[in-house]
Image: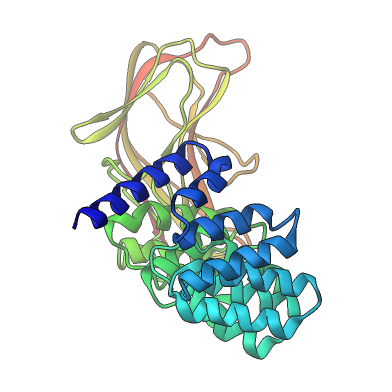
Length: 373
């Protein structure tokens, strides 16, 4: 037992030594010559500068630990660089067979991607994608560089676990082409932990003008909340605390303007120091093209220095503003959507009229409704 305890102490010291200075692996090898990890680390250090020596070090590691997947990967890379594809494949296969971790599975899939045998690439890629809790971005990058049609990748990889689906959705959010994003998001469990991701997906789909896909993902979070065909187009008409993303109201910070959540309304306080042109809050609503809609709102505008300029604006172009007048009001306006309009931008704005001073006052908005006529 004393001998075993001594060997454990030596091994612990060796690990500490290596962590302090990776360049001291050779000293570590002298202390623990039976440690396969040491010889593999030395092989990895020599891989680029002296592949022949690295191969010998990897083989020594494997003599001590025949299941060392990283050593097999090193030998596979050396064989591939020498043009010996068959030997490289044997080593990559041995690495994948000896470990269920992501890196050996990915190494085999990446080898097949470089060699371009499609029939062997996809099974290896599928096994890599199924590894739980792994960072799958390297695999997705390789697949996207190999397969031109991004929309079929999730299907080809057979992504089924919540981890792989969420990882791929996050990857697609970072790509110029997010084809297939909605289909992937539609399979993600709308649990609280996944909500920020689904909100980000909804925002991306809105930026891409993918109205129906954005509605589908939003309804994953809030089942049945939106259905333009049934006239369900507006989210959170009472301005309750929400997501500030997706189809919910999005406040826009403006100097001199304060947005406060009152018990039954949204309070907008204009100090008189706000910019001459500003947008305070907006919502993107899914609508049907060429249809008549009615926008109704209930609000109270009060203050000691009220001026014109506060208004609703429909769409993102220079459409005519819809003024909000002093006092308590329940007003409405009827309009028709454009021939291709599927996303309507509704915003509360301020524009200082020419020759007038800036408005000072308080606007309490109790509700806003958008109904299909």
